[in-house]
Length: 305
Image (cartoon, rainbow, N blue to C red; front, side, top):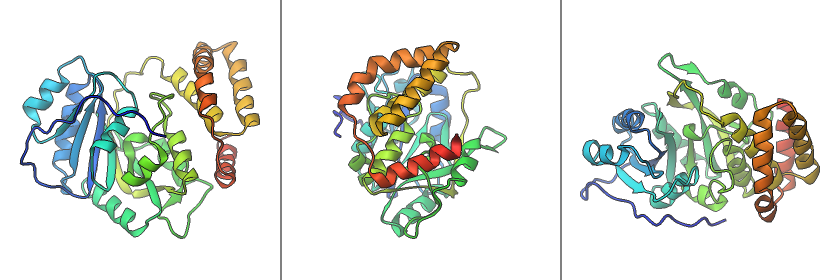
C-alpha cells in the first residue's frame, strides 16, 4: 500500500555532512524535547556513525528549536500534522540507506549493535526485520518481551538468523528498507499502539523474514508515568489487526470477547467503540494472510492463549 508523503521536505542542518554507515536511524517524536536530546546524544556517540533523521510529529514544544540549536548534524523532517506511526514510514522514505533502525525519543542502540545488524542483513538476503533484545531503564533489566520472542514456537529457518517471530518492539527493530517499503510500512488505521504485529504479518506475507536476534541490543528508558488511554488503544488495534488480516471466524471471536469485556471494563468499552468507528475502513482494506503465515499466526495464538 502506498501512503501519501508528508508535505514538508526534510531539512539538512549541515550541507557538508559526510556520508555515514549503511544504516540510518529514524526517530518519530512529539513534544518530548528533553528525552529526545538524551537519545540523540547517545546515538551520535555510536561508533557506526549512522545517519539520523528525526521526524517531528507537529510538536508544539521547543523540539524544533532544540534540534536546530543543539543538533545541527541531525536531519529533521518537520511534519505539518501528527501522523502517528506513519511518521516512521515518512522517515524511511526520506532516507536512502539500505537498512533503517528505529528509535523512539526515549530509546537508543548499544555501541556495535547496528554494525551487528548490518552484518546479519547482508548475510541473510531474505531478512526483512530484526527484533533486538531490549534493556530497560538505568538498571538495564531485560524487557519481558525478550523472553516471549526468544521462546517463539516458530523456531528458526535455515536462511534466517535468530528465531522467527510475528511481533516486535518498534523502538528496538531494524528493517531492510526495501522490505519495509514493499510491505507498505505501518498501517494508517492503527495510528499508534500495538501497531507492530500488522507490519510483521505484512512482511511475512510478502516473503520477508521477521526474526528475534538477541545479539543486537537496544536500550529503552520509558517515562514511568502511564500513558492515558494506552490499554484501550492497544485492544482496539489488536482487534483491528484481526479484522484487517485474520480469517472471519477469528475476527468475530475476538470481537465477541471484547464485547463481553466491555460490560465491566471501561477500557474495553472505549476500545470497542473506537473499533466500530474504524471497522468500515478496515473492511475496505481487508486482506487475509497467505495460508503459511496464517498457520504461523495460529501457532503464536496458541502459545499466548
